[in-house]
Length: 198
Ligand SMILES: [Fe+2]
Ligand SMILES: [Fe+2]
Image 1 (cartoon, protein in one colour):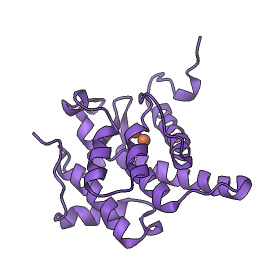
Image 2 (tube, helix red, strand yellow; image 1 turned 45 degrees about the horizontal axis):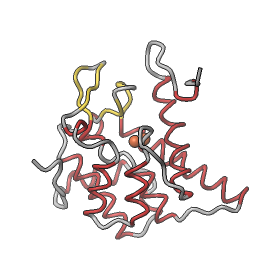
Image 3 (cartoon, helix red, strand yellow; image 1 turned 180 degrees about the horizontal axis):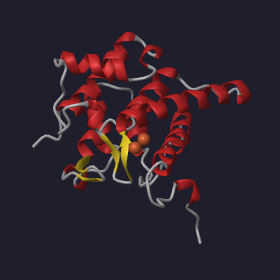
């Protein structure tokens, strides 16, 4: 069974995705439409009726994927602006913005809500790792290779991360936002920044 189907027709979903995603106006209209199609496709292929129901991860079961995605886009744009101003290092917005917005596009297919306090893993997540499914979708939609390869390898458990500047910006934006989500959880879940070699 295909893990997802490309959905270009679901207009109520297109509107909801466009209303949700921060930063869409920073890219050209054609690219904006492809970004919206990518999210509409994983949403309509997922078990979730509403965007707000999509869980962020098993490690932070109370956080919404919807919030994490915009957290990362905003933090990434701030970091990129800082690097440009202080270091003269410029990201390509047509690469950076899709990477930030789409890095977790496959998560609606990877995680399943088991209860209010528990998020588990889908069957698909045992067949292909997080990032790779998103990269497959982006390849089908005709995104640039750098966007595809960065999404494919961005996850913490990837054997390596890309060496392009946009991958570095995504990494720190993602971990900054991820630790925020983890530290909001009840109990003593350990954020990444406090994990040390012992
Ligand atoms: Fe991710
Ligand atoms: Fe993320």
